Length: 144
Ligand code: TYC
Image 1 (cartoon, protein in one colour):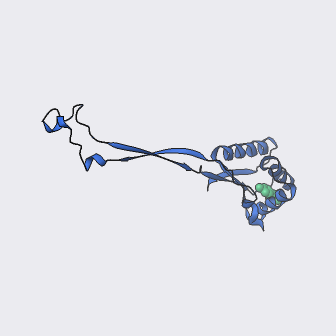
Image 2: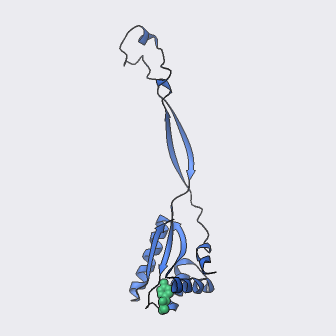
Image 3: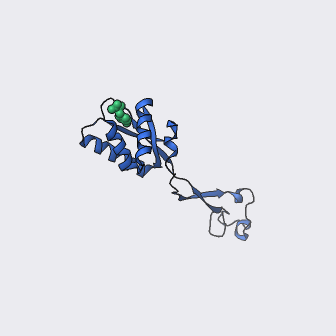
């Protein structure tokens, strides 16, 4: 029941396109016979094609994802943690209460999974909010 925490967040459908260039050195296997080459002219000259063939392949890759976690401590009030989960993670009150209790009992819980930039922002927002309210609440991220 408590380990539902990490399932409650929809995965962001952020994709980015990465160009991956793959080169085949076909000419090394079948060197092209240019007329200039055969007649003994400069082998590196313009008439002698090295025959290097390239092919570009495009494919989509998912961005790396990061788990954002809250850590337990003995001092941060439960209501404050519930408020943090509602405010920064878009969870409703009962989801927030459930996750807070998971952290309280187990020591930590994943509260969401995000791309690197969004995870960094969430961690910074929570840490700043806790510090401003003088609570020792800790929020961290870890690559999935
Ligand atoms: N353990 C805290 C208490 O008993 C509550 C708490 C829950 C603190 C979750 C941090 O991430 C936390 N007041």
